[in-house]
Length: 251
Ligand code: SAH
Image (cartoon, rainbow, N blue to C red):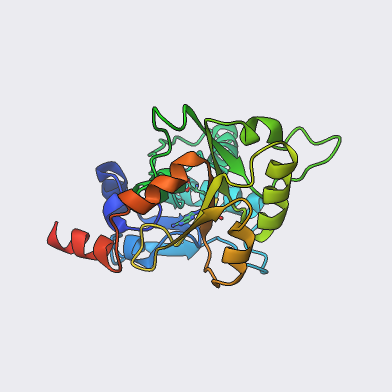
């Protein structure tokens, strides 16, 4: 796991693995500043998808991992955030296990944790939220789809819902929450390019978030957070233009 963007959020273990790697297969989401921590002579292979382009297929990525490992190389499969949170880390490990290739897993700070911290939005809070749910915002609804989110549960009070990959379907997500009983006044926020120097945080309510988002030209990647905790951003925001970067430079 490469963490959400700020290279200082990498774990010591991830840093050591990067320094040891002969080959790094990385996603597009991994920030260049993180890739810069690898050895100069390490091969860096981007296997990610850009919006609207087809990247390497999952089968191709699995085959690459296996063939590099079989050639005796130390391979790092570097993913944004945490490899087991919407990162297909499980699927890739299944392929490695089937091929009898040894592996280890290094967790990363997932986007929800990193973005919430840098936006001053506590994901849980004894007064406002007793649970938090990470949701794949692009999951398809349908009668046969076991993957559809439980909208009724997400619309309940006292719950924080974090939608990954949801910006393109923002209108749909908001409509579903309202339809399942969430009040229009429930706070909702979008964090774009979280933990980087370009981080932007927009807060609104379910009633107004779509308008706010469409008028503000947000860059991906972006997360949607819905829940009463989002209102705490007004008093707890601590990253102001450039603050995350200043912090890492003085560290
Ligand atoms: N494994 C990753 C998630 C991959 S899915 C993790 O644990 O974070 C990709 C989605 O993650 C994006 O569509 C976006 O919703 C979210 N995301 C990743 N990095 C982000 C960032 N720096 N700021 C905001 N959202 C981010």
